Amino acid sequence: MEQHLTEIKNAHLFMEYLMCIGVKSPRSRRDDWELVDKERVLARIKKDKNGDTKFFICAALLGRR
Image 1 (cartoon, helix red, strand yellow):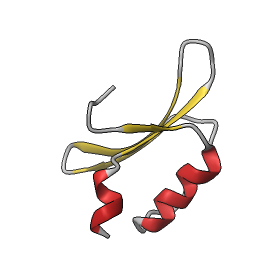
Image 2 (spheres, helix red, strand yellow):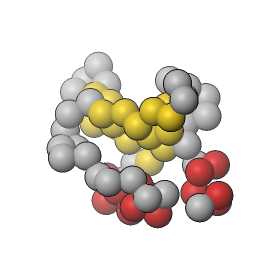
Image 3 (cartoon, rainbow, N blue to C red):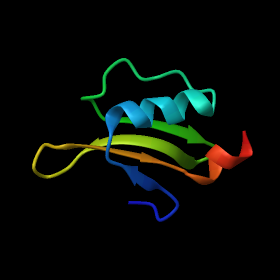
Image 4 (cartoon, one colour):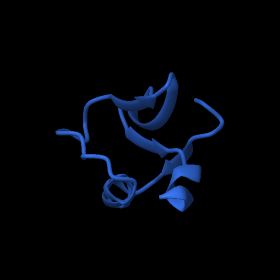
């Protein structure tokens, strides 16, 4: 996983963070999803090896917007 991404343990909080940076929420929280800007991942939803859904965001974005 990219070092600039921070894992968010709560799906609802992850969606709130997306709204704070002006990003429309993905249709499904269960499918893999990425928000990429200029070849850098800003947010990601990913299933781990156990099938658990993990949420990641670039926390530096939250202070800029």
